[in-house]
Each structure stands twice: as C-alpha cells, then as structure tokens.
Length: 288
Image (cartoon, rainbow, N blue to C red; front, side, top):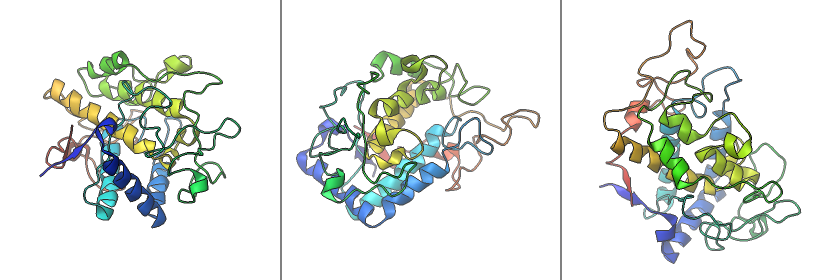
C-alpha cells in the first residue's frame, strides 16, 4: 500500500520529532553524508563535459525522484512511520514560519557568519557537523531571504506558469530552454537575479548558505523542497495526460547534446533505473 507524504504544516509534533530523529540517526551512522557526496558527484553543469543526469537536463525530475526515494528508504529503515514532508514555498513564505521552527529545521543563520544556532541541526547541538561540502566550515549555514540583497520566494503564479507547459522538455535539453515544463520548474533563465532564478532554483537562492551549489543536501530543507518539486511533476502528469518524458531518444551524433543527456529508456546513474520507470510511483507513495 502506498504511503503518504504530507505538507509540513500537517505534521503533528510527534511526526516532526520522528522525522528529525530519523535524520539525526542516519547522519550519526554516516549514511547521510553519502547522499551529500552523491549529489556533489552528479552536479554537472552545461559548461562541463560529460553526462548531465541530475541538473540542467531532462532527467532532473526523475533523478531527484529516485534520490528522494533512496533517502526516504534510509529514514524508513530507522523508523517505518517516517516519510519526507514537503514545503509549499508558495504558502509558507516567512523566515519564521514552517519549516523554520525550533522543533523542525531550526531558523536562519546569525548575521556574522550565517551559522544556524537554533533547532536540532545547529552545530552547537553536536549532531550535525558538515563533513562534505565546497567549503571548510563544519556548521550549517543559511541566509533566508538574503537581507543584504533581498530575493523573494517564487509565487503560485510563477509555479502555475511552469505547470501550464504542455510538453515535458524541448531542445536543446539544457539550461537555455525557453519552453517545456522541466526547465520552467528547474528554473534556469537568462536575466538579472530575481528574474534569472525561477521556481526550484530561486528557492535554493532564497535559503542561501549551504543550499547553494552541489553540496545543498547538507541542509535538510533540501528534501522538503525537492518533495514539493516532485509533487509538481505529479500534478503536471495529471494535468497533461499522455505528455510523457522527453526526449524519447538521444539527439543525433552531430548534436552538441548527444550523449550528454538521458533519453526516456536509458539508465540514470548511479542506480541504473530509467526515466520512464520513475514516471509512475503511485504504488509507492502519494501526496496529501
């Protein structure tokens, strides 16, 4: 029977505690840092060589869907009652609202060094040391809303604009796509800052600190954010029935994207599952 992923605002105090405790347990076991390393390893940008499985390509959504399932599986091996909640950033938009409470993810970083000092993931609690990342800092950092150069969270209208797209993705299958659901949700766009970063990308920018770049998994909010992004793929699938993952096949040999993206029936590293295998997860979980 499918389990349920809830809006973070629907969690009881006991459910919040169990979710946090499961995260802390897999961190203590060394399992959590494996997820950080994996995301860093597959964070390949347009300008780099090689396959782009996780970002800036069509497999952004199925890759992160499987990534979430792997993390959720690790949590449920600790506590079978735990599922990953989602953070609806079109509704919970304050720096002091959920999920930034002391009993869940803790709050913003302090102004001097962006170090998170409240909640269970604060460095001073002794349970959440950053061991894998792009900086040498051992503590979790955040810069919610980026007060020095303010940025806003995406709105419902901006998210709806992505959901209205009728095709999943389009050529050139990278960060420069101007049409297609995938890139409008992932959020790459030319322009200045608040315009440049849309939807998924702008949330990473709004949180700031550890959520910037390939090591963003170091902040547990990564999972709540990506659960909401995954939910949007489910919503898009229901709205546009029959409009599945694209491309169906690799671009031709002369195309610059040939061999750099994952086609519908090709295996995504590191798991060996294909995008089409990730399209229907209704027997595994559903969203409340």
